[in-house]
Image 1 (cartoon, rainbow, N blue to C red):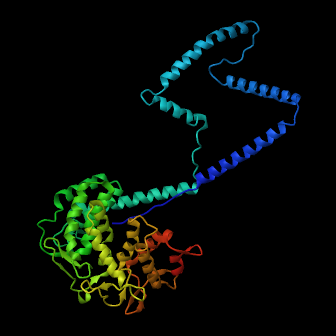
Image 2: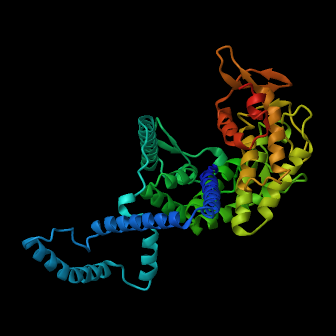
Image 3: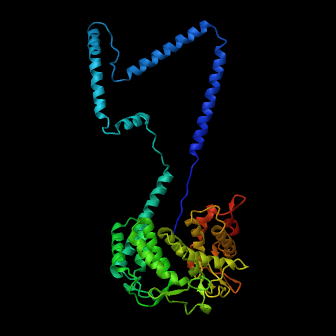
Length: 461
């Protein structure tokens, strides 16, 4: 489940208001100067001014009359032309009546016709329409490139979905070489991970046929009752299934998705039933039994598992009115930050029973990645409250530590390293590539030093 925020604004109104105010003040000043001047001129001069004003009004009236269809063009009055002019003069009232009748017939009828007529009077006349915005050649080319890119991305999604629906529809994954469906062990007997996870993308791309196909499967085949009693990944089920269902509900308002999400969310709650409130790595959706990964050191949970449930659980509380989901993730995150490491970097493992940190290893890629992503997006989900000294402060404090991992190679490529036992490991996994986007999303909200984003300064950009 991902959230992106777009904020824009403008100051045009303020500029226009300032110009109008300045114009009004100037007109008022000129009026006062004119009034004081006229007190010193004689009656003869005033009379001459009055004559000039009358002549100007007459000229203006003549011009207006010549441009109005209701009045004939001036004609000479000699000979036959004089009788023709008299004939036109006698027909003028009749023409005016006919024009008024046509005008009344063209007006919109109904109870709102009077209001519409009034609004028409305030509209700009056709001959004075606002000029169309003229795009530069560069802007036109950029728009065309963007359009082609969108079409290409959508065609790739359509191709991927077509292959999935043909060879592995309803399965968790598609094996691209053998063209067979596959269900990893960490999903147990739960099916449809790719389908549910991709649903919001189908909706955003307006792929209505594919959306209807996916919705039908979710309605009839995505069930949590009667599934095999096997433990699944708390983390994977949350981000793929719960996140997919909640995203679909957020985009469509379809209660089918909300009801399914609520059922699944309740089944994930037992994962948080630990002395610390930190979630266990695995859970049996049928019985609520929990466990840890056999390969995790000392029965620890993973940092990304702990921090990558906040968005889903907080949003689920918001749409259902049940605070238990938000309370669970808030308790877990509080425990994490109550024991913030002195070095400023979070280890990849933490023990859910004791709250103690595991081996001194740090990565914003595998094992850590989405923990950092969700710190910022949780603040965004809450509406970016400026008085929130908790969520935002957690993100800023964490990113200051991450800045020590950012390096530049000899080829001038920026990368984010890892640490092991306190020693820098100059490698960057592909799962850390999201960090560029995270920096970009949070740049506008980041603290600044001398007008520059602090993340740019800390990371040497």
